Length: 572
Image (spheres, rainbow, N blue to C red):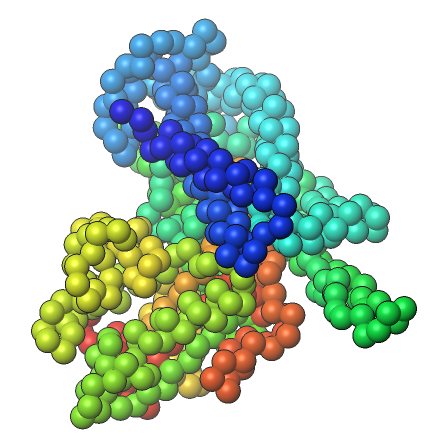
C-alpha cells in the first residue's frame, strides 16, 4: 500500500500531466486560463506538502540512525518509550555523550566550572570528556554548518520562486536587483553569532536532533510558518519585494505613445533575535540523583523555548529583543495585516445569528469569517490555507446548532459532510494541532493564542521577560479572542542551532549551577504587502504596506455578554 508521500507524488504527477497537456494549446481562452491557474496553485500546494513530509522523513531517518549507532540498535526515547532495533548499525565510534554513554553533559559542565565533584572520575575526567566532545563537534559541526547555509539558501530561493507566474517573475527581478545593488540575503556583521563555535558549548547533537524535532507542544503556530535554518554568523536577513510592477494599457492611436511603467522595489528585513532560558540546579541534586539530567534539563528548557517562539510569532513586538509577530505587541489593526472588526452589540447572538428577533447572519461570526477569507483571497491572490484558533473557540462551536436545532459541526472530511454543516470535526478532542475544517480551511488549535484582548484601551497581551506559566504571552486586560487565518507559507521563520552554557560564579555560595539554553531566530511576516489601501464595505481593512498574507477577525462588544467571542461570557 503506497504511503502518504507516494500518494502526494502520484497526485502531483497527475496534475502536472494535466498542466502539460493544457500547455500545448496555442491560445488559452478564459476557462482554460482559469484551469491553468488552478492546476498551478495545486502543484504549488502539493510541492509544499511533499517538502514538509520529506523533511520529517529525513529527521526520522537521522534520529533512527543516531539511536542505532549509539545504543547498539535498541533505543529508548523519553517521549515514545523503548523502540525496536533498526536491524543495522553505523560503523563509527560512539560519541562521548551519546545516548546510553552514562556520561552527563550538563553535569560535566558543572564539574568543570566548579572544579569539584567525585562522581564519574571527578573534574579532571569531566574536562577530558568535554574536550573530546569539542573535538567531535569540530568534525560534525563544520559539515553541519555548511549544510545549514546551503539549505537556508536553497529554501529561500525555493520560497521566493514558489508563487504563480507573475510572482515568480517579480521575485526573479527583485533577486537580480539585489545582485545589482550588492545587497546580501544574509547580513553577517556580528562576530559572536556563529553557530557551532565556542568549543563544547553546543550540546550533544542527538539532544538537538531528537528532542527538539519531537517537541511540538506549544509551537503549533510557529510550525505553520515556512521554517528555514538560520546560517551561522547572521545578523539580519533581507527579502526583496516589488512595490510597483510593470504596466500595460491601450495604445490610444496608431503611432501613439505606448503606455508603460517602471518597476520599483525595496527590501523587507528581519533582524536576528535571541530566545534564551535558564535553570538553576543544586550541586547535590546533580551529583546524587539517578535521573538523566541531560534529557530532563534540556527537554524542559527546549519545551519552553518552543512555546516562547510560537508566542512571539503572535505578539512579538520586533523590538526589545523580540521577533516580529502578526500582532506586534498585541496590537490588532489594519496597518499590520488585514483586519475585519465587528462591534455588534445586539443581544441574543449565536455563531450564525447576528442577534435580534429575526434570524440573520448579518454581523455574525459566521459572516465575519467568510469576509476575512474573501478579502484575504482577493488581496493576496492566493487562497488562505489554515485557520488558527484558541481551543475554546472550537469547542464552543461544537455546541452550536442552527435554527432547526441541528449541530453545526459533525464528524467528516472535506469531501464527506452532512447536510447544512458549517464545519467538520475530523480530529476528535485535541488540545492543539489540526482538529477539523471550517469554511473549507483546516483549523489548527493553539492554546498559546492570547484570548484577553481589550475592546478599547486597556492592556494588550504581550511578551514580557519570561513565559507566563503555561503560555508565552502575558494576558491583557480584556475578555476577547480573535479568529486568525492566513497563507502561512508566506511567513518566513529562521532558527539557528541551540547552544548551552553552565555558570557557577553567581550561585557558587549556595553550591548551585545555572544552565542556560539559547538560540538565534528571525521572522518576516510581511513579505507580501498591500500596494494600496484595501477597502471593503466602505471600511479600510488594510492600509498600504500591511501584510496581506494573514487576516484577523474580532468581535468586540460594548456589552461583553452579547459577544460570541467573549471567553468569559460564554463559559468556555
